[in-house]
Length: 379
Ligand code: GDP
Ligand code: MN
Image 1 (cartoon, rainbow, N blue to C red):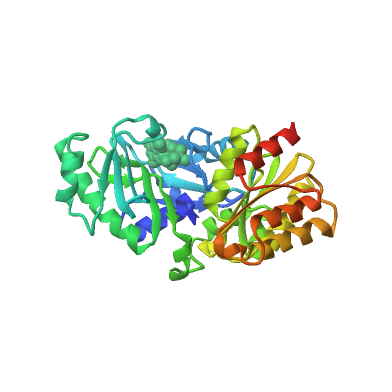
Image 2 (cartoon, rainbow, N blue to C red; image 1 turned 30 degrees about the vertical axis):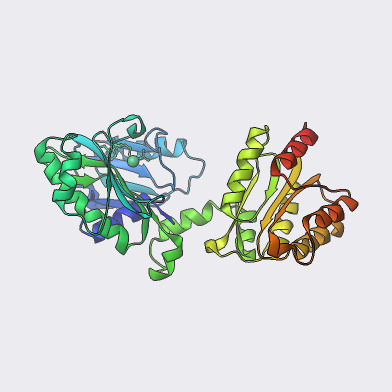
């Protein structure tokens, strides 16, 4: 679950991390009087996407009277006028630093990332310290890794700051805790001016479900009608811009197939995954959604690829045949089948392919041959 900036900052504040003063201003609302005396202002659109600065969705102004103009300029760059805005006290930034704690997926542990030039163009900065985190790090363990990137004084201050972040990530079940920019002020204070925080959804049950209403609302709004039905049916669908409906199970296979399609000049219009990592049997439901997607005029073909190890291939082919014969498919179908030993007790792969071919469906054991056939048909 990705947190909107305003919720991410609330989380940080709860753990004693300094963030600017700020208030959420809803559609058509005026800022509360208490903000009038702030020395400067930043108005920021609350979206679950980054790059807001570059897209004109972050505006600075010096006096409270600048609010209406700033809001107008931001709304001009948004599709949705119902986007919440965060009004903050501007921080006088002397230096922008990038700092993040994330899960190093390969090593299955946390790591700290610190770059001396944060801000909007952080990707271009070559200097980045990557510090593996074991247990709770002490500032002394971090200092040597960053001392060359900063003055000794800043490095020491930053080491103390960074040492607190892994524990917050653990307590809050975060996959990512990124602060960019972390502002270093003239007075030597470190203030989190932006927060990109992602909580592991599998750990959602450990936390208050009513927390972070802005983030939940924004996430819900970004979900399409079909994505919502898929979730209700027990699997995850992400709609993408493409010309081929892709039906798979599991994220790894889906990504491989998306790449294969792209290699052959096709684009997948759908990405399917299991919900919460649990491989529920949802083939019938996936096919139902696939049919709805395939009705769309921009769709040219349906590519179905399955890889099964222990479930029954016969059952899966039954589901497929029932779907194909129920009513004519709106677009040509291409099927790929790979099955391990235990899956083929009732029906082997050759028999499955024969059964589909009887119905006039092109079926393959090799995913590359499958995609090639689909590409040929589309062209
Ligand atoms: P993002 O582009 O979506 O990551 O949005 P940010 O919250 O990072 O804002 C973009 C940029 O606006 C930052 O990199 C800063 O340069 C600037 N910015 C944001 N907040 C402040 C602030 O309080 N004071 C100053 N001086 N600049 C700010
Ligand atoms: Mn940022």
